[in-house]
Image (cartoon, rainbow, N blue to C red):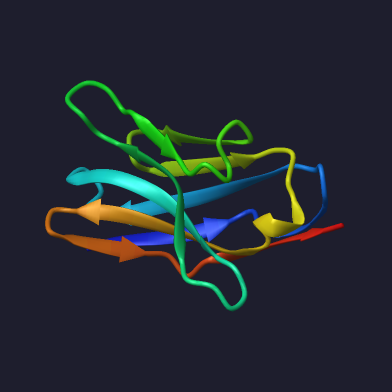
Length: 118
């Protein structure tokens, strides 16, 4: 089992920055990858960024909507995964969820809300 707790959301003006954190606990060593998803009001949840273990490397992925503005990173193995969000736009508003891929299943955090005002 893996527990995920997100933090760092809040209200920010357009053009500002936020850093989200996802603290993982439990049996974290077998995690093969983690990601950040977001769900805007009235829309489906979408993948924003991910980082996966590939041998000795950890390639990252970004959606086109956030490429060049967001950066995903990890610290202490899978203990904490961050999402640095810069140049925020009103369309980045939503609830951000942390996700962990664990063998054939996955775990989710409870989400942290990000609101970007014009």
